[in-house]
Image (cartoon, rainbow, N blue to C red; front, top):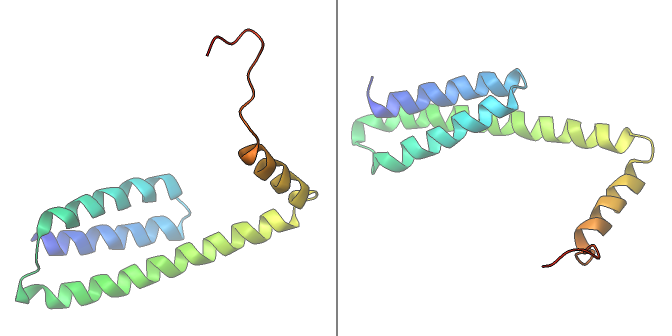
Length: 105
């Protein structure tokens, strides 16, 4: 299998992982696909159809991820006290670092 077709095959598998909600596997596979793509260099003229198919698969994968993100946002918004909890996390992020009395740092 040529490297461009292998890239398409990996993206197609990632689309399935996203559809199944297998997010950790998806992240690992996507990182590998980025490494593969970085190593390829310019595409030959004969890769046009594969690249067009890859663009379609990537658009579908992006849409699936956007839908999943929106669903998580809806679920978080529906949680009791969700806004208070999120505000608490935000405040903790911006608070100055606290040190214990015994800290030597």
